[in-house]
Amino acid sequence: MRDLKYKNIFITITTLISFIVVWQLVSLSGRFSIYILPKPITVVETAYELLVSGELIRHLLISLERIFWGYLLAIIISSILTLLLCSSSLIKSIIDPPLNFLRQIPPLALLPLLLAWVGIGEEQKIAVIILGCLFPILFNFIGGVEQVDKKLIDVAKVLNLNKSQIFYRIYLPSALPSILIGLRVGLGFSWRSLVGAELIASSAGLGYMMLDAESLARTDIILVGVLVIGCMGMFTDYLLSKLINKLSPWHAQEK
Image (cartoon, rainbow, N blue to C red; front, side, top):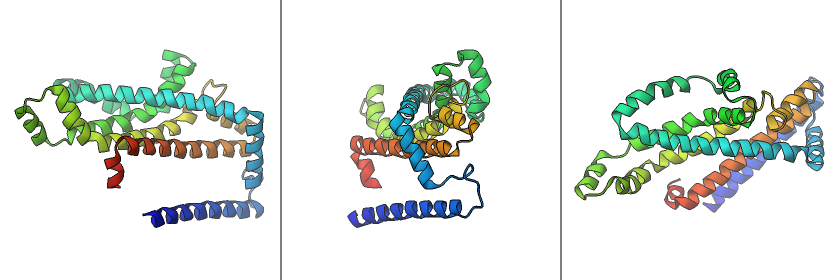
């Protein structure tokens, strides 16, 4: 197992180095302007300048706060909707059609409505992130609950377990794998929604930093933003997976 881990690390590092080498060779070939594809060293120098000046940290912290609130609220909303949809077929028949309708609409398509309803403040940006990660979380939650073995429920009723005991002893453990998948997928979608959330009337955040750099033809800053979002997305996914493995060690053993 340890040898496999080291092998995966070696492959990852080799792939990363190969990517940088290819990037450097392409930028040196002269086929692309430095304004279109700056050299890797230029991007590193720009990242260092932004880091030292505090500009990168400021934008990153603001984006992280938006991700936190958007992701947390999406989990809360998904949990409530899952309980409602799975508790009654009547409620499901009422709520399910509008949810499926909203699921087909890209979050950015709702930006004009969000601007009219909640304005251009933080609420609008958090709302876009919620819409971006809500449905992957919600449908994995629902799928996990619906795949619970009905025979276990029948046995629980024979043993006179109440609804709370049935939920915590049967539904939650059985649905946990799908719930965990939904949390990880939703976290990835929250980062994907971030730039769109910060495109309109924003004065801070990684998305704003990249949009402002585009108007100044600073491709190096845009690439710094792209790399930071990608790395932070991977890092937060890693932290979430570690938390999941800590809270449910049996899940880690199954992998």
